[in-house]
Image (tube, rainbow, N blue to C red):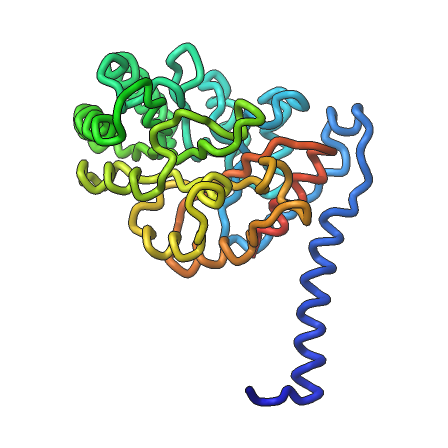
Length: 309
């Protein structure tokens, strides 16, 4: 290995110092009072580079802001979307010049529990998916979420075959509407909280989900690549981004462990992951889906700033 000269050493030190300063500045916002959080005080624009299209996942912040409060806060931070939002707020998103990067489905309960892997839920799930596709078409949104569902005694092979059959029943409808269905991979390892992990979920392996997508073989069926879940169940995140670049339909973030803020208490190198997305030509959105453990304004500032490579 060649020796570094003094100029190279100084340059490397400056780069490291600059990166640390950026992260520290994002984290040093003092905790807001409850009133400051409610009215969105101290909001600043942190998405500046334009290479990552930032989105905020609505359910994570429902304890702090109503949807109509969250929309202008997201816009002021430089985000272009608030996602997985109740369709009754779609008009408000449009009014603020915002998008819903990916829409949810309404099956009357947690949508990840009863999914495409079980034929007894096909009629319900397909109807809910078509309804969401229709709403997306009306407003110009482009993505709808989907789930395998829980095993409920089915083998992985049976579940995969059922998913293929179910998706084939609805994917043509999505193609005609110009909407893409995104199958989300979830972790089954974290059993500490119902929204941090999902023991029993069938699609807990990225390769399993990719196999389903390949067997359906539609440009309108993609993968919701949740970096938090992938890091827990499969790891090797950056290599997988490159490996499955053609199947990436949407991206989610959160800190691991804990599904909390993207800060120094978690292990994922998000700037490197974002750069990998840019390198493979990903053009979709990145939805920030962490559960706040402190001031949500500071947490969002930090997540967006760190991912805005």
